[in-house]
Image (tube, rainbow, N blue to C red; front, side, top):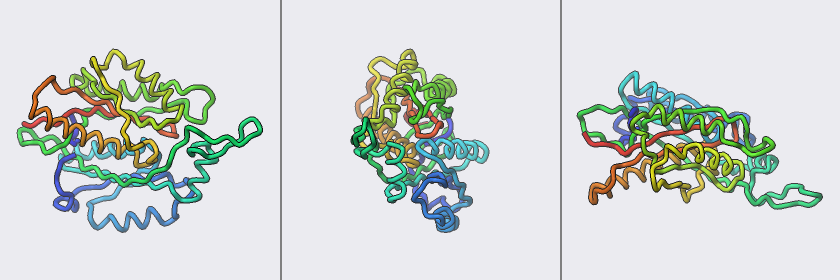
Length: 288
């Protein structure tokens, strides 16, 4: 990928010692995390990167790492990397999710009976690495896609708030990203969201999609990856971005073999149990 209009297809080993790494992990307060996790990972990674920067949070936390990496790339005109890791399978973590009524099929009290939660998540684990670099025209770009814009916002209503989540924060992030992308986002053909069956995410996506109606191209598609990225916690957004970048790369190769309509932009939306929401505008990489 490149910043801006952002993941070069190069082997990390060729440049790892010269570039920084942003490491995305769950927040420190989450049950089930080994107390020495951060220190051990940092020691293991530090010899291979110029710097290791820690970002913690939940589903949309990778957006904070991407924003910091973007500033670095813009200032230094060299590559940077993001690594997001999560595995919420520890017994304490599962108990924590169940206590918050976020675990699929967990039984919670309802009208005097234990009712299985039909909407909760099935925790998954992932480690996703992204290599990002600047655009250097007129050299040929090796990127899978371009990240034309990135924006974040806070959602005033979250999963544990009474009433539907109307997507005010997600919508604000989406429109900020579209405005920042400018001409690159005049036609949004794909709208990707990390919905995974939970009502609050369905609510916020529905309200956000309605507000975006005028910015969507004819025949636009909603994409929810078969891999339930919403269940990957801190690795959610990084995994979404990697899948979307691969899809854009494959679609670009197919269009080169069979040219058709002009390429459209992709709007990627990231939700969270926390207030943070994120939106990214992705466009196909262009060869100089």
